[in-house]
Image 1 (tube, helix red, strand yellow):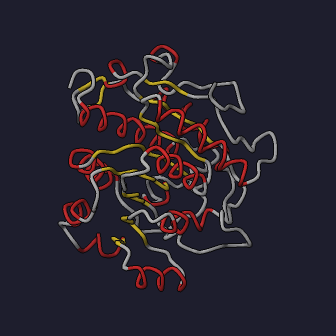
Image 2 (cartoon, one colour):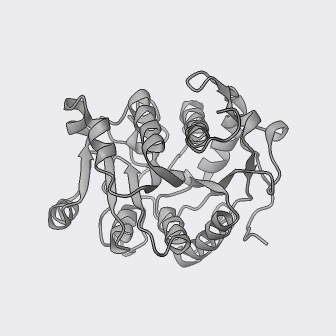
Image 3 (cartoon, helix red, strand yellow):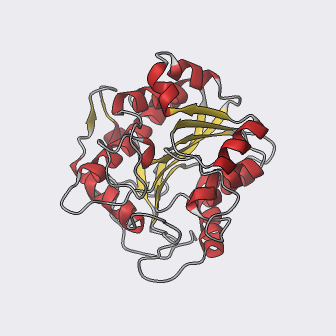
Amino acid sequence: MLAQTSTEVIPFLGADVAASYDAAQVAILPIPYEATTTYRRGCETGPDAILAASHQVEYYDEELDWETGLDVGIYTHSSIADTRSKTVTSEEMLQVTRETVLKLVQDGKFVISLGGEHSITTGIVEAYHQAYPDELFTVVQIDAHGDLRHEYEGSIHNHACVMRRIVDMGLPTVQIGIRAICKEEADLIKEKNLTVFRAREIAAQPNWIENAIAAIPTHKVFITIDLDGIDPTLIPGVGTPEPGGLNWYALTTFLRGVFNKHHVIGCDVMELAPVTDSVVSEFTAAKLVYKLIGYQAVAQGWGKN
């Protein structure tokens, strides 16, 4: 029995293409957890906003020349660690996230988790660490912020600390689009010689995509996407916007390259905080999730391709 805290499900893309659990290759896992956001609140409503917006996404992907969702089984899990209706501690969130993701991975699902705040990724990565105890994988982070503080506002599980927790696990990381860090984070990057592709450097380097993919040191990769890594002119609905992020085609070209050259074991899309009277952020996020599904389907040879 999978751990659940909510039974109402908005199926990704819609009920007419939803697959049963047993038939699905992809599992969408909504995690509407918010406890430590420090600027705009609202990311606990992000997963449902993405799922609802996905009903407006065209099944046909013109880049892949494929109605991906009609050939790839997509199952949408019930929400876990849902702070919209009750208080959930960070320890509770991490436990149910670890247990649920591990179960899905052991059942052979390609898991795309939807947040919620970025601290959730610690539990997700811990689950993959348990699933692959004898093999390192790289965490590729797309983000405006380093998220490398040891603690913030009294918590080591603040959303500003998630990548520090992953570094502490001994996993290699590659950070993409970073443009806001504190002195503590800058010092840690130098001390540990972390691989960081800063946004200002990306803007000046035509070959940054090839260089970034080449910098990934392991075959297996987990991709975590904080939506503020994308320029806020494209996705304004985030908790902590920063100017100068990735544009859509740079983002998707990089992602497709990672899927083509590495084995992506899972993904998450975090920190959507919808803007009132605008759907552009959640729709763009939903289309991004569909792209992740399509890139994995092509890379793994599912369905048509």
